[in-house]
Image 1 (cartoon, rainbow, N blue to C red):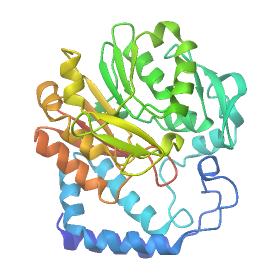
Image 2 (cartoon, helix red, strand yellow; image 1 turned 120 degrees about the vertical axis):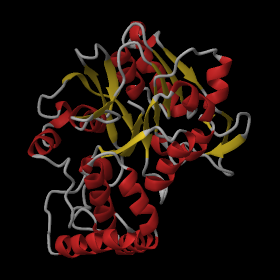
Image 3 (tube, helix red, strand yellow; image 1 turned 90 degrees about the vertical axis):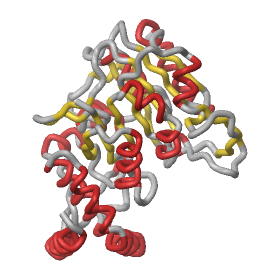
Image 4 (cartoon, rainbow, N blue to C red; image 1 turned 180 degrees about the vertical axis):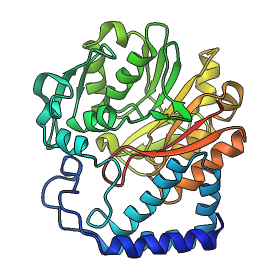
Length: 348
């Protein structure tokens, strides 16, 4: 598709959605009550201008994506960013999702809750969940259940492609936060698998250690690397702890040094890297640059968060293709709001 055709498609859909009005489409778990009827008009207009200014990039991405479902997700994301939750309803907002959202900590019986409100982070409760598959106990928010169990976060499962952790995989978990996803990945990787989790925020690590302690067998297959993932190793960055939203930069009360994926893989003498997951608050491009040798050598499955910075949709896709043109690219989204768009890539 060329830029002119994509512009026409985008504008036609904008007009169509502008006449819609959705009730009950506000993500209360993520943003709290009170925002149902509110949108940030200035932010929506900014996104409209960004999209129109980058139609050549978006048209490239449209053609680079490997299936029609990924293109549907891209267009849906463009419209959601441009019009907001009052006008655009994500495909993930199914009746099953609505039932889970209304179903309390167990998400309507989708999961077993061992202990409600076992811990608190800000205004959020963390519950202890017990799973049979994978066989783990996880201290997590209800949002983890909605994104991972209900919406399949970090897993692409389509008729023509599957990108997921498999038994025996060696996994790099970049941006591990409280360790909930690390346990989920390690459980799916099984007894012969291994997870290397990068996390450096002190408050997150407290919960991470608690999650590991609840799972001594699975936890023994998880290594915690207390560094930020970067293009090169040994760079000192600053940050202020903000839980899962912590970003690194040149200012902040705390410091952390970087480690590149290439340096970590080589220092650990890893003979396989099968799956790389990244959710590192805008540092994904730098982390991919620092993983070039690893990706070219092992050609792992990739699940890269592509929503933290404007342009991540196409910039991260271009980065993956620049590292290895053989990757097939897919896009999916795992919530009913604007966050959690994931770029998947595989050479299969």
